Image 1: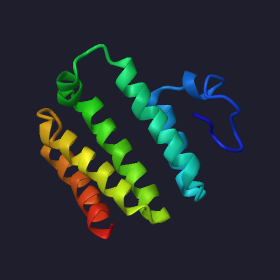
Image 2 (image 1 turned 45 degrees about the vertical axis):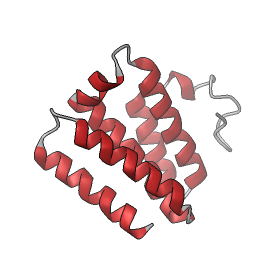
Image 3 (image 1 turned 180 degrees about the vertical axis):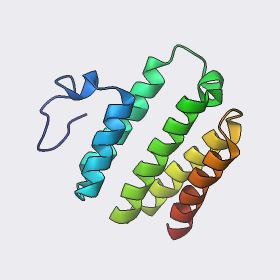
Length: 126
């Protein structure tokens, strides 16, 4: 994965960042309206989250922090795709995020509701 204007190779810098650092970096790109870079960074964070887990997918989704982070990454990527007018991919990301929240048993109801509202809003706009 190549991050435009910043990294020539994902192995040089980006791949060594934690998922939370990648999320913050993606948020920075989003705020600067560098949406393609934000999408790539959120995608890398999602891949790293999947690769770094030695647990099964069900266990990852049931872990409060991991499931919330994963759902938020999908939601953030959906926001980028919404701004770019990529409706189909936005809806796919929103649906993925909602599935994660629905299977997460440990995330607090208040936190889930807050995230779910954003996701449903983005999916409705798409």
